[in-house]
Length: 210
Ligand SMILES: O=P(O)(O)OC[C@H]1O[C@H](OP(=O)(O)OP(=O)(O)O)[C@H](O)[C@@H]1O
Ligand SMILES: O=c1cc[nH]c(=O)[nH]1
Ligand SMILES: [Mg+2]
Image 1 (cartoon, rainbow, N blue to C red):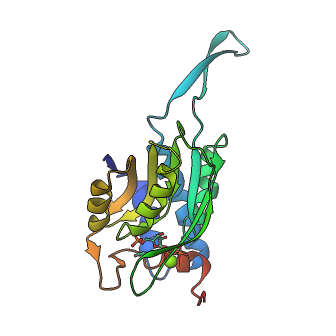
Image 2: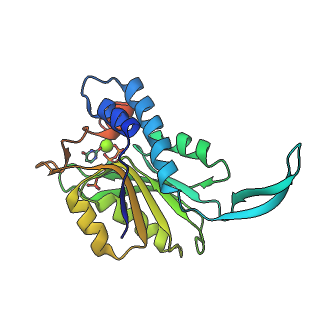
């Protein structure tokens, strides 16, 4: 499994804004939007192009278009904050949605929404979720995608934790990960350390859901 850690000064400053507990929701969302553009840029570095002929005002030359526009899959809620920036970079992309909420006690993900094309054979899928902690949510999401025939999944996240990397490596799922950082570990509540807290709450507010 290919793990790409994007080391770049602009990534470091956006990630710092997101980590800082004094950053308010609006600035957290804006840092996540910018960070997503930088990470998706790296995650799509090897994407396949198809060439076609164009004319400039001066002469003929080759132009390029994406050979296989990806399916973007933000994982609700927190991944919603990555959807628009990724779509802006990849306007040809289509978008599916998966809703997952991690149980606070067991840390197991609960699926509450699944809106994906039935057939994903031959498609490139880019999963967007800022946080990969135990890896349970991401494995669940990628299993749904692989069950539809996909064998090419790129995961884009802001932070990943070592146990998740290990779990994803052992999962046998056909994925690569692009992240801004692999942090030190997890605390007793399975939150990433040093981390940035709950990425959903920091964007949209903390509230009881049921
Ligand atoms: O790797 P894991 O241990 O599974 O944890 C990561 C998941 O937790 C967060 O979502 P959360 O369940 O808090 O839902 P939210 O996006 O609605 O806040 C995060 O956005 C991931 O989906
Ligand atoms: O640190 C963490 C772990 C799971 N989900 C989050 O939003 N943050
Ligand atoms: Mg959350």
